[in-house]
Amino acid sequence: MRLYPRKVGSLAVGALARMRLPEGLRRPLLGRFAAAFGANLEEAQKDLAAYVSFLDFFTRRLKPGARPQAPAVPGGINSPVDGLVIAEGRVKEGTLLQAKGLPYRLGELLDGDPLASEFARARYTALYLAPKDYHRIHVPFAGSCIAVGRVEGELWPVNAASTASTPRLYERNRRAYWIARGAREADGLAVAVVMVAATHVGGVVVDPRWLSGRVLPRHGRLEVANLPCASGDDLGAFELGSTVVLLVGGEKADAWDLTRGLGPVKVGERLGGFTEPMP
Figure (cartoon, rainbow, N blue to C red):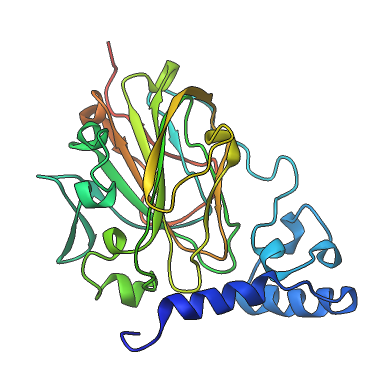
């Protein structure tokens, strides 16, 4: 991969994914892809023939009710994506672990965002999306969005082999992030959803709702005026698949714990909550 032109290759794959498929080829081509990777077509909102391109299929919506949100509980944070929980822990001295022996830095992950200090004691969870997975990203709790940002970077793979061997992978790759503070049952918590791009997955799209008509810069941040959010709201999408690093911080971060183990998880399933009654 060091010799492979990752950005050029990703642009080429992106262009192919956007190409309009002849109507007669949509069902066989997309059906073969779905069968090869194990995508669940029963959940898709539309018939295969209605998806005009591979990208249209990758970013497909699901049937209403396919991903119900877990009931609200004190400190409840739900999964923002379908995928695999591949790593978890607590930020210590500004450091997270992407894999055993491979640290990366909170300040770099959030590109020096002024809100990074709210995640100094955060619990982090890394969720990997495979090509078969539903690729839309959703809000994990009730609260208010206060910032979004984008960081231009490299496009290394984020599969298990690369995660275990590429130093500082998540802080080096292109990414976007969304930060919110919690309300009601999640009062005292703050969440950062960091959407990490990968080889052939250069597109990380933040939902227009959070931009209020503005354009997210290629490298920079936008303040958001406490825009209300609820569990399950649209947050963004990956164009193919990649990894989300979820940070749960705020003044009550020490009382929040992950109750979900490593392994598969679906949008809306509870990841964790407060481990003790809060005053």
